[in-house]
Image (cartoon, rainbow, N blue to C red; front, side):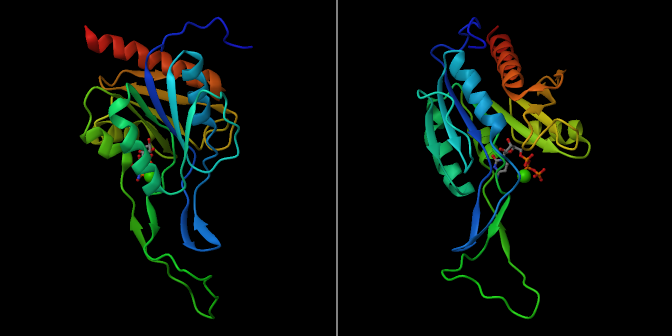
Length: 227
Ligand code: CTP
Ligand code: CA
């Protein structure tokens, strides 16, 4: 198996990863979601597990097999369910990586019956969901907190802004308009930026290789903070 000889750098560490999209229902047969497939989050869970961590994976609806039976999978559907699951687990964690693409809005009303079509236009009122990562940032104790940012425009500037506003220790920025990066792809091209605004651009690689590199950078930055 690949990576067999990789050092077990995360033995004894609790690592929480969120992955995939969320789904926000509007009626019994329809929902709002996004293009996330969960591949990056599942790759992170696999890489962390291979490094010896105790991994909790909070996952939205995806079509991926759990990469290892020892990974503690918590399946959720909505942004609100993901919020509850993550907040419940937060105090036990050493590292939290939020790779999930969480819905920013949900329908204000969920209809009990299937909505019937009308002759006129339809407007659906949407309300904001909770920002899970921002809540984690504002209640952080010792956790090393890592966000993801999927951007199509000015990725580094928007990413740094999120790093600061959400009180993160690092952010992984994904320019989803590049070929071979982002949603659904088996490869990714990311830039990792830590709190000191040190930028590390990783070359295009498989999501598992990118995951291993991200974890190595996190471990490097966790060590630096202890000196
Ligand atoms: N995130 C979250 N809860 C939300 C929305 C986002 O935890 N309700 C997290 C994502 O998991 C990701 C990070 O915040 O790690 C950045 O998500 P992104 O969608 O890029 O940023 P937003 O803050 O939602 O801003 P915008 O969508 O306007 O760019
Ligand atoms: Ca968003």
